[in-house]
Image (cartoon, helix red, strand yellow):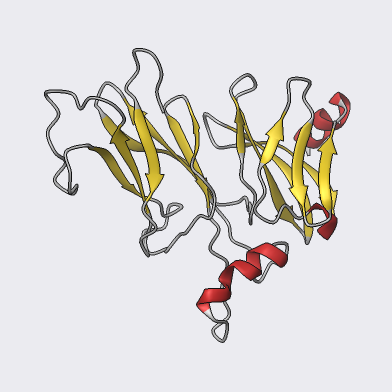
Length: 217
């Protein structure tokens, strides 16, 4: 995160039971920077809980943090677990059964570095959308976060406003042939969307009128 004269960081999550997002100063630590009270090292620039708006929720994300500008977003990859199911096998639920409502995880959360206050802040949370296992992508040109989601037992392509977290559009893809199984969503210069599945690679080229109609529904 950060280029040129901007503040520059390495962005990671810590994998705690209640996971945190951490920012580390990437190069020289500013001379006037004071160690955060909750940090174990002066290089830590920010620590914030990833909870999808629920302080009691224990969130884990199998995906890398998605960064664009000073924003950093994560999806919730913690499925709703039946009492009898072993915790070590949780990823099977949102991997192979990610469209099943009884297991499906919900929540996408974005944080942002405030360069004036020099602190990490919560930007928005969307708890109505589910991205069970995809690695999202941000298009800086369209200001949209793209990911594959799940609705009514089918896989979808989801477009989310990067600034507000509000849905821009969704497009129903279909059955398990479109399960990303923790693959990343890619976007090329011509607007084609690609992602891998257990059955091969998917290439999407939505027609403009279809996207507009979907966004209005």
